[in-house]
Image 1 (cartoon, helix red, strand yellow):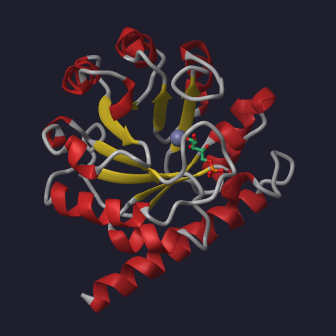
Image 2: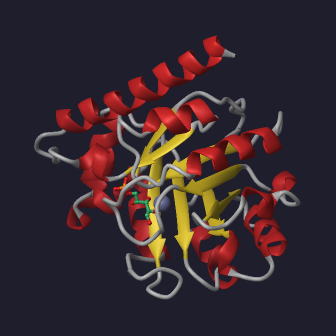
Length: 240
Ligand code: DX5
Ligand code: ZN
């Protein structure tokens, strides 16, 4: 999927740096990558679309040289269109916009691809899978929010598992990733993996207990999530 890379539905763990030390992003990103994460998930919040503020394109640009894998930028901002170019220039590989962020989702997704990024679309918990039925050929990733966006450390909403399964059906053989974001832990990840998700964003479950000085904990946390996802997927495949 990325620069000559084949599309693959392998399990991918994308730690959210929302749970990292904000004064030390470079070293935190290097630590999680060394400990085996697949992508780096970057949560951009504007205090308007969501009730919290993080950072903007300048921070993304500053951390970009530290990302050796793939920078997965989740825009929780409205409006989104005026900022697409700036985040693309900042080096985002994937730019994900919310269905609920504006009236012209199809235009937004076209603008993201035109800016040279892979296009993602995120759905809040109350937004149905069918809301993106007509734009599936314009996206590379669908992000199913399994919490209400705005904060790390919230509980996974189990009703979202059926949405993942429905989207997996709708996507069919299109090269579109299904990402789940929010409340992902070794306990909740099996549900989403069995339903068909392949990208797992985890903030607190990756960063808890570890630090740049003690990065092995990040590695253990990543492995626990990955192993639980893989076991659930194998279980669902052998049951099918
Ligand atoms: C929520 C963000 C998530 C969040 C996940 O608004 O989009 O990426 O950081 O954090 P945890 O894994 O702690 O729920
Ligand atoms: Zn996110």
